[in-house]
Image 1: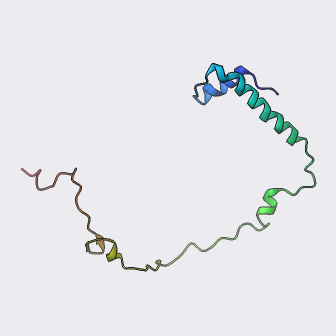
Image 2: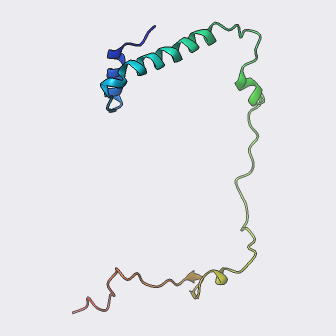
Image 3: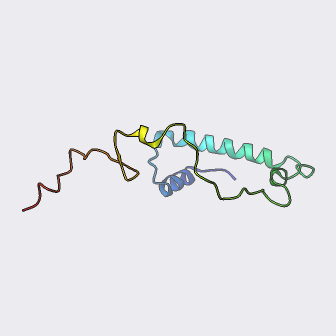
Length: 106
């Protein structure tokens, strides 16, 4: 099956791509070349080749690990990451673009 210029225009429209009319002939040639390679590959006898999915996974499926874990050990304390903390939370400076709550009070 060969690709035509109308096929390229149609697919480009579906994908919402702008196709330059000067490139249309080269795109048709490239796509027909790719489809030609696919035709050659489809003629290769693969009856004796084991399916890749059968090779990748054992018959009983992929073994799963438990979904539970404890806290990860840290090399340094959490307090070393920020200049100050309160009640186990990091205290960060207010952004300059935000108004202070006390400024907006009447």
